[in-house]
Length: 423
Image 1 (tube, rainbow, N blue to C red):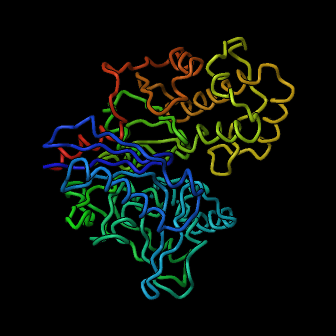
Image 2: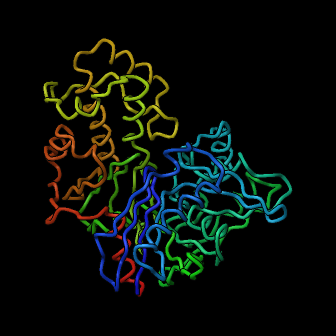
């Protein structure tokens, strides 16, 4: 049987075809993501058009009977069961003006919300952002990106994988049940309809669609973060640093004995990982490039940075520009601009500030130096010489070198491995 493995990510849509259980590398294809082109909140119909365009292009090369999908997390669309209308699509980058109010109200109501859900209520978390689109006295079906595609274009089975469910910010991650009391407290006049959460042993068939008049079963709806980690084959001794549009530091954990306000806990295919997320990365660098430096040689300048600043030098700014960043500082933008104008070592200071975020994160997620290895994944930021040398120079961990150069993105490798586990 042939399958399409597809990752609908923050910056691109990537896919490859698995032909008779073997990856056909020649079929790898990437297209620009709708989030890159249309922003943080937009008409959900755009997603359908771009997804189907991508999938049909792949189908024309080799037909397939299944699609296995992972996607960016912390997103949602609402479907009004009476009017049959869909809300806009809200990505994790959208910041509601009511975020602080909703977060404070939720935590006053349930002091254990973080411990139970595993999720810090950052700006951009659906539990908060739903305030923007919930119509009073209505019934609204909550859809994450994979379920949206099926619901709008095909036949949905009203089920969700726990990796995506947890990213909504209102799931009891141990019991796989929704925090309905919390939702009713924040949204008292709205009937929010939430999908069934798959059990660990269930095959995650989320629905079916038609491509070129042929029925295609759609599986997964996995979170892209967990899928990439699965592809990287993280072990109990590893700390994983993923650097993309945003960045995360992650490690395997026991959710029954490990809880800390310093990090989140996420479901991981029958196990759990602890995570510090929303660390500034590609999104912040692109903002600095386009809005502050306006330098066509920006990435070249970063690649050419030599280490001259002392080890204990503390930069005058951080890259936590956006309110959704884990250590948001409303002075960051101004301080970066001043440094760019006045500091002849600006590019080195920028990279030093970026790397310092990980030193802080490591102390929070691994205070007792329990883990031995450091695993790096992600995009071009990790390959900058200064950044590579920084991670190689961390004395507490040995950098785990991959035996073979990756021929595909780790999300696609992860999807390939998951098809074999569930079949």
